Image (tube, rainbow, N blue to C red; front, top):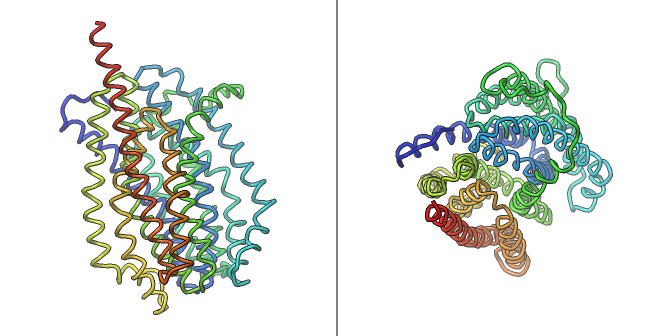
Amino acid sequence: MQQTFTLKEKLMQLFHILFPVFVTQVGLYAMNFADVTMSGHASAQDLAGVAIGSSIWVPVFTGISGILFALTPVVAHHLGANRYEQIPYHIIQAIYLAVAIALSILLFGALGLHDLLAKMKLEESVRNIAFNYLVALSYGIIPLFIYHVLRCFIDALGQTKVTMFITLAALPVNIVFNYLLIYGQFGFPKLGGVGAGYATTITYWFCCVLSLWVVRRFRPFSKYGLFRRFYRLSLSAWKELLKIGIPIGLAIFFETSIFAAVTLLMSQFNTTTIAAHQSAINFASLLYMIPLSVSMALTIAVGFEVGARRYRDAKQYSFLGIGMAVGTAIATSLFLYLFRGEVAAMYTNDQDVLLLTKHFLLYAIFFQFSDAIAAPIQGALRGYKDVNAAFVAALLSYWAVGLPFGYILANFTSAQAFGYWIGLIAGLAAGALFLSIRLFLVQKKYEHHEKKTEEAC
């Protein structure tokens, strides 16, 4: 990261950060995409089982790992203020916290996963696949969370190309082991959807080991001397991370879990509906990687400028990011409308599932514009270390508006399964409106503070 003076320089720097983040996010999501699509070509039961397993795991991971996103604005602020000596200390503390969080997830999973699946109205084969998929995946949770911390550090320095290369290296590892373990090729056991869980675990370990090697061996990371000294565990450092991270994690959890909750509620419908819904939501989530990447890039850029007390520059970055996201939303909406049949065919050979998936994808078009506004604003607010608003917005818009509205439509009108998607659209729109107002108020506050500082000088 470096100071910029014109809108053109800002646009170039934001794109320089954004593009590798986007490739990284697409690569990470492509692993889940590969799990679902490759399981779908094994059988509809494997697709449904992996869909249910993913619907439980993804909100848990994204929500709880969201706590660790606190490291990005913390490092960005220290970088902008030239407090370089503070950076390795906070990274080591974040790794301690990551391991503690991972162990907690494993404990809760061991105690409650079986009962959770037992309460769902699933075919026995689907339930068994979902359970064993999650068990297989659990062996990679600790390295995944350590990698997540190292990624936040790497990205906060503006070196987003590095995480892009790590992800691009990991993606073929995931696909190859999916092929070997789902279909039982070259003497490997044929595990169906469960094999996707083991392939994902192998990939998590690969990412962790590779990122550890990179931050130890290559500049600019090596100059911070990570792991040369293991600091004592500091509850005050954890408190700082958690104060920022818990609202971020809860906001992400409420946002992702609403989609998971809808998938779980879909269990009242038949396996064909579950499979079609999951296929459509999986591709819609892949498209969400665009505004999400803009969001992550804005956290880095805005955090750097706020740390340096250049508030006008932070505001300019915010609007550049939102504009980029809205522009791409127009393009992705047209793509969905024109090629929804081809998209559906990537997930299944079953004609009934394919036709229903095409119908769901029409509703996914409406997700694009709300996401293009809400996600970048969340990233900008994190750069300001203003994280509580996104948490409140996610709670109210998704769980007080989206889910109840969707439930009523799905259970008391002829919309049925599509009612849940209409509820999601309403919740996303409400969240985008609330966050837009919050960003305006935060920027006005910082502008007022900057004006007072200039007058004092």
